[in-house]
Length: 228
Image: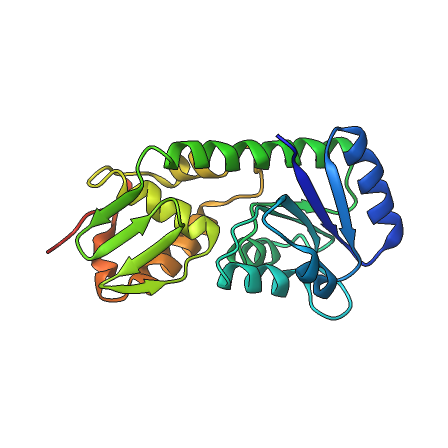
């Protein structure tokens, strides 16, 4: 598989170092010096985006949020010097798949890129076994990556979609936070229990009148089931 990576960073030295080393590791690499340019370049041929957070013009967080709102589920790894817990949560809420703080080693970047691509490919294979998941008034089209709630299509981020699909595909089964992290955030050391809670809260909000389908069994975890 030709795995194409888009590097988005306004520092030329960082772009050059990343491109040289990732190409040596066997990846096809393109670079953009701004989020605005990246949005023009991005296509369905890209397997992953390495995205700087602090850039002139549109920030990496803003670009990621915009992509997820448009339904683009291309995996995103943030590269940034901002590494407080709130920054991490902001990044994951914006739709990040991983988060690498600066300064970083090239070996770490390559390892994280491979890990995120493995996760993304594994989720796609897992999802392909069932085309449509329907629970009560919630319908998930696994192939089109869309969610319909009571007849209305609702936009979910990539990670929100993965969590919802995992829960809805296993109605009645309880998943702990650790279960969700292990399955959907493999090899991502910065994921906290609170990160899962943030995603769950966003999913419940978007489910609207069906939010009662997603419940928390105190001390055990989350489960999804129709209450109709």
